Length: 458
Image (cartoon, rainbow, N blue to C red; front, side, top):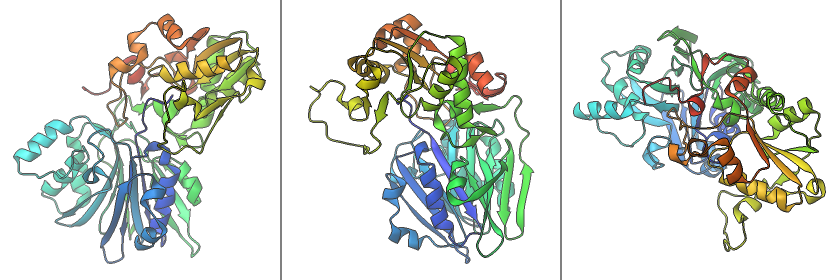
């Protein structure tokens, strides 16, 4: 699946003398969630904040010299793929503001679906917006709140928001994390032991960020919870009761999260393997090999192979050293864009009946090219298996998705899709099978991109 862009990731750390550099590493681990821009804000002992952000990958935005300037005992960071608002400098997070009770930096993963009417209302009241993103609405709500207590301001201001938000905020004397009452986007809490003794508190979108910096996973930030840490220690309150049922994003398991993360309390890798196993149960086929579309389909292909007994092979090798852009000499080389990244192994595929497993199928054009490559390598039959249901609708909760009319499953029947991608057979994982894989009934997860049942008016 190559047609949905990732969303965003947040990271925060409190009480670490290397907070800026730990945040850099935490963002690096979560780079898969956003490649357009990155930013870090740090907090000095004096209460002053230092900020740096820019367009590009984490390694491009933060040089060694820049990291040396990001000093302080606490920091938050963000990587972004724009879902609301463009990629101008004003939209790069953390967003910053000087409020009455001091400086604030804010990083947000998700999307506020009622941001447009909120912006209109705030502009009528005199608010001057710097960017076009939805997150800025919350800064203006905080600025207009009558209380001098930041926690009170946050708890009451977020009640005006509808949609998905996992937030990390850095103030002059505290770091705050909060998650919307539907629990749509992940947010986890951990601790990092310090060489001097004691530990630093860490929050992140995914646990893979903890692994890189040697932090220990403690728990999720709960839906409807506001958690904060200051010099007196950690604190937690409910600002709103969790919505029943929850609407955790099931696509985190299908594609967005790194396989070595734990999301919503479950291993992403094991869940994707389970999706492959159930896919093999639901629609078995006589074949000689199971191969993944690298790297997105690998865990599901392993599960499919183990359940079906059909041998697993790396029939397609991925070039991991492709930059974000490269010069294409001519489109006369058919499928050049795919071939520069993926190379089939004819020695493995020639004369074989091959099951090709991927995590999802969105527009269908990439799948079509992959199947063509496998056939050109000599495969006798190509059976395409998708470890998620047909994608029929866009996401409105913090993921940059194609329009509905661009989604092939919204335009064509199963047979029409099979013919378009030129597979001998095509099968998707059922919605029921996907929910079995995540260890739950449909209750508690948002699967709107598959079933059209959006948890908010959109």
